[in-house]
Image 1 (cartoon, rainbow, N blue to C red):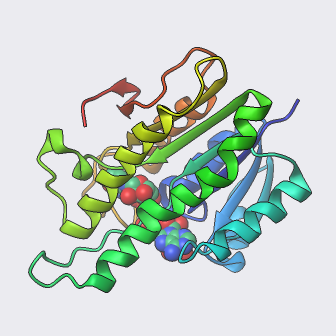
Image 2 (image 1 turned 90 degrees about the vertical axis):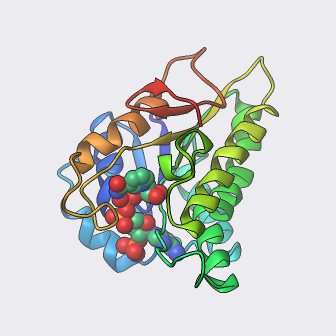
Length: 229
Ligand SMILES: NC(=O)c1ccc[n+]([C@@H]2O[C@H](COP(=O)([O-])OP(=O)(O)OC[C@H]3O[C@@H](n4cnc5c(N)ncnc54)[C@H](OP(=O)(O)O)[C@@H]3O)[C@@H](O)[C@H]2O)c1
């Protein structure tokens, strides 16, 4: 049976390539975008595939929960959720404000949590699910937390919640949650000097979202390898 996948930030960058990759694999793809127009525009770039745009601004809980519930009512339960959308706030630690911190934490940490809360119980009840949190090496203690403060802290929190929630998934079910870094990728966020293409940045997300039963849970990946975070 066709599986459903929801990809946040699906309208550009790595997210658009994740959408394209799942569509190619035959999934029904719910492309969650800040606004419908940018999603519909991006969708024109995808040839074939069963792709549907869902307007989902990640700035507050209600604008995440309502569209998620509507999407499941129309398309059926989500089998895979890829929390890809992210913001990179480069404000220095001296100047970063509470509001800057809240914005980064909302999009990079709390929005993924809200979607996980929406999707995970159903996945466990049905016995199948894959959740992938697109994080960053800049949020890794093992890499000295080198990113700008708001970004690094919000991605470190995303890594931490991935492990914490993984520990709460019963062993006897085929449901997993993992985090990953796409590497340094040529997108609006990564900039034009980045060595990886968005297609390459999408590969590990596709792999983690489609792995067979008995695959990893609560781990952090780069280029399909487990790495310390
Ligand atoms: N590029 C890299 O080198 C790199 C490295 C490590 C990790 N990552 C991670 O990879 C993921 C994708 O990055 P990318 O390089 O593809 O970034 P990008 O090109 O800047 O795209 C970011 C995506 O997130 C969406 N987004 C941001 N804020 C949102 C909000 N409030 N509501 C809804 N959508 C929102 C954007 O939507 P709009 O188009 O509406 O703004 C866009 O679709 C991010 O989580 C990023 O942290 C990237």
